[in-house]
Picture: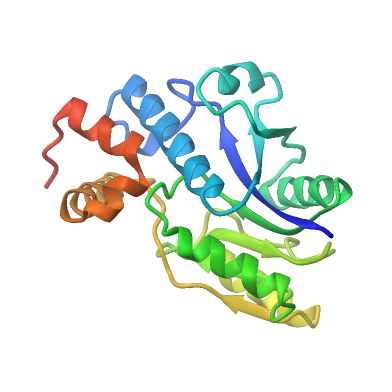
Length: 227
């Protein structure tokens, strides 16, 4: 019987190459270390919901860097493709070829994402109540893609990193005759305003702190008082 898998799209947390929109107020080094915490917490929560987790990493030589900071019992696959749509298609094809189903694909920008969203996606797809699940972000993109079967064309002609990405993907799903289940909206942490949102959420909820312990320790270590 096929088993579900969560795929986390991770960019190596190298200073000057990740979370650049957070510089300033952060230094390049702090932005990179924060990105590493996001990746660790995202994978932690993925492993709280399913047995198998795959890290889809970039750049192609970054696996050893990431292996040094992530758990040992993960699957690994280098990202391949010229844009996010091609990379999503490639990693989904790889995971399906290994016999996994359904797939839940996450970015590593939402460390406080409720695990219930992942669990709901797995349950809906396993029960064949949906072909595709999408989790919209507040900026018009999405934090999660759930797939029950391989799908060709879902990620084509998308204006990535724009407020249109979610709606364009949903429109593709409709054209392909797929049953789409939208999940609750959540947020990515890309801008200083998002960082303030994270800070406020983290310090207002013990549940959130338990969900993202690495990110919480990062905030404590730097004693950030964001307004």
